[in-house]
Length: 218
Image 1 (cartoon, rainbow, N blue to C red):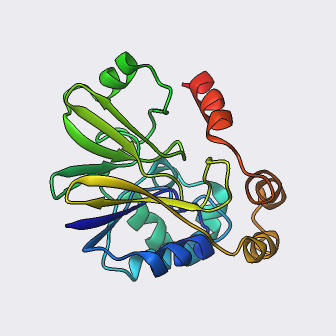
Image 2: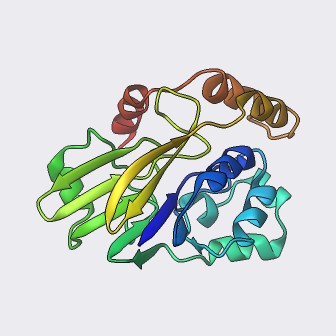
Image 3: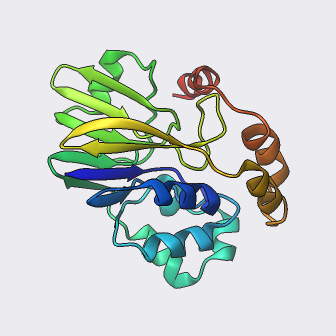
């Protein structure tokens, strides 16, 4: 079975469309945080039009004022009501952990802390939340970060996702039209638009930069 794990779209429909054009899978799992970005409504409507498993991230559970202003009450309620985790073909998918959408796990988080965060769980768990791909094994536990489609911290401006084939994760990277994204984000009215363009579209945040900041906050 082939499962496309699409995480952290963050209101970036051009990046999502580029990925969907490449996806060849039996199932699609959206792992949360598809809002909090310039075009949350357009992104949410595109996701709902698909036959996909959609999970809640922290941005759906607690939407910011911009997202609430762009979405209908029904859309906000739908996003908040989404499940936090799903099991597909023996693999667990969730935003941060199977029970909590906030814990930070990076490629550099100490093994003992990862084991404590995922205590009681075994097997492969595909997460997102920290926006950089990694694949870690701690005893019977395998934690795979699917990457971020709309706000990647990989040292390259592109959409990052993971294809899980018969339980084995394969990291994927899809280019998208960055110049178009810059124009559309700047025209969106999203309050952090200029900052996002400067820091995430005209500049590629590296995994090392992200990990240093996330581990400090963890």
